[in-house]
Amino acid sequence: MSKWFTEDWTNNVKFSIKIKEHLYSSRSKYQKIDFYDSYEFGRFFTLDDYLMVTEKDEFIYHEMMIHVPLSVNPLIKNVLVIGGGDGGSVRELTRYPSVEKIDMVEIDEEVVKMCQKLLPLTANKLTDKRVNLYFEDGSKFVKGTEEKYDLIVVDSTDPIGPGEGLFTTEFYQNCYNILTENGILVNQHESPYFDDTKYEMKRAHKKLKNIFEFATVYQAFIPSYASGHWLFGFASKGLHPIKDVKEDVQTKFKIKTKYYNLEVHKAAFALPNYVKQELENA
Ligand code: SAM
Image 1 (cartoon, rainbow, N blue to C red):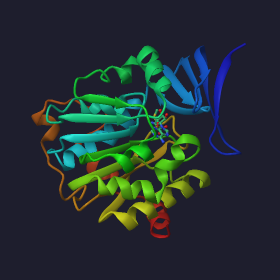
Image 2 (tube, rainbow, N blue to C red):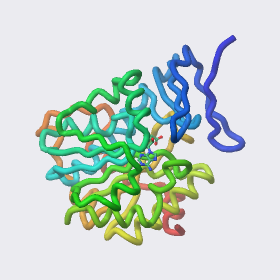
Image 3 (cartoon, rainbow, N blue to C red):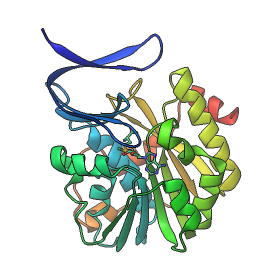
Image 4 (cartoon, helix red, strand yellow):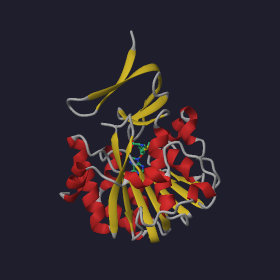
């Protein structure tokens, strides 16, 4: 009999992937962790039965998370990644020789260890000498640190369980306080399509808009995430994602991307009317 992994996208919609092998299952102090191998998406892992990263479409999420802010401010040197235990965001950051320091704060050490073992595609740059790993709660870290960052990447789970504190006003305010003058924050901003994720998207946007001089969202198509239509938040102390974009950053560093390019960058900020309306009503 064939085996399937099924994620509930809503109470009425399910998404299933046919499994070759269930590679690993455990319960850490924070969450249930599972790794699978599949026919269509390659290896993937889930936290509390929610899909995090698949080998087949992770490049879309990680490229859009990192190359967008780096194209807006190529002078970014000091970066804080919150969450991101699979290492995909760090991998994209390490492609910029101009980035000098990457602090990654992941609450669950077991996620990192298991990704290094079973998902080297994303985790293989976590040993780069510019990367410092901290295993603690990101919401506490941003309250306590005296460091200043040019970019904060909030590569979090959904706002349930350990990820909840990464969607609060206090967290965003603390992030603002530790950003440099031209600082940018990008975050995993949920989907605008189904009601549950739409609610979280609006809440996050409202909070970011109240704190940052500039806040908007941008979009990408990520097949394994609920509805496929996924958003990222872009909040800054003034830099504009399109007016301030530099045209030649990836060419200069010879960075080849599979999804990201300048046309995609600009188009990603062109939002459908229903998304604009939801954000205005947030
Ligand atoms: N791309 C993914 C998505 O949107 O589905 C996010 C993946 S990444 C693996 C999310 C990580 O955030 C997880 O490894 C989780 O352990 C971590 N995390 C959740 N809450 C956290 C917190 N409060 N502080 C630091 N890391 C946290």
